Amino acid sequence: SFQTGIIIRAATVSSIYHHMLTLSSKGKQNLQMGETTNLVATDCQKLFEVCQEGHLIWSCPLSMIIVTVLLLVTFGPSTLVGMLTMFIFVPVVKRVVGRMMIIRRERA
Image 1 (spheres, rainbow, N blue to C red):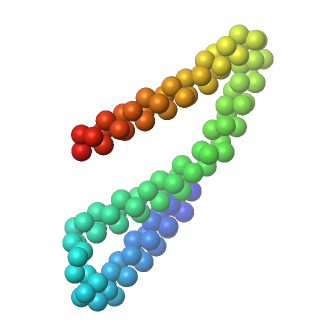
Image 2: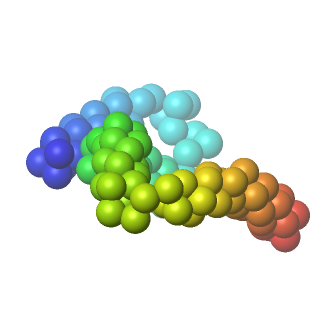
Image 3: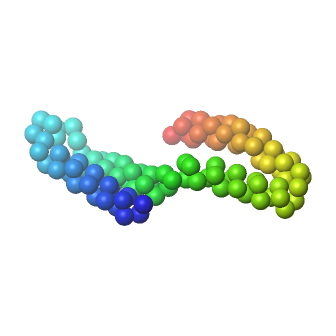
């Protein structure tokens, strides 16, 4: 996944810069080079990160199920209380993070 991310990032950067070189002067009129370079680097880095961490979409739930089963076998039904507490806090954390994002947008 690391090599795939590098290949995708390199291909995307190359494609975007090739497109930028073929733009007419009218097309380049409102573009600032520093801003464009920053956007390209940021977007391509995000693609690279998705390639590295995209497998977590399926592996995290699977890991949680395996860990829950192992904890149930080891500690018994008391494990369910801990798991239930963890799942109850997910909406609470989501709400807190949403509020933090609103505050961050208001400050900017």
